[in-house]
Length: 75
Image (cartoon, one colour):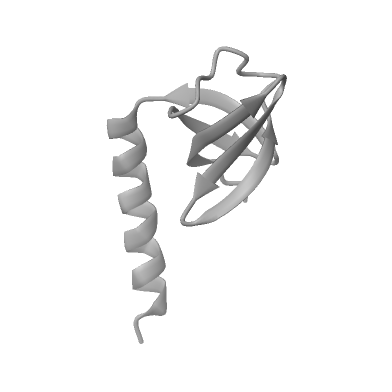
């Protein structure tokens, strides 16, 4: 199963961006989302930003992912 997750774009240089998710920073390709602006949330999959999403939707998605992670750790 593959999973794409929302991450915040914190810097951009040409077609590369630095995103942050849960305190972890990763470099991703912006070739598919050249319109992305620093501060926006991107859907990231396999090292590529594949879409720009609004902050409210990103927050809701991240909250659900956190709920799943917490539930997985319950006995």
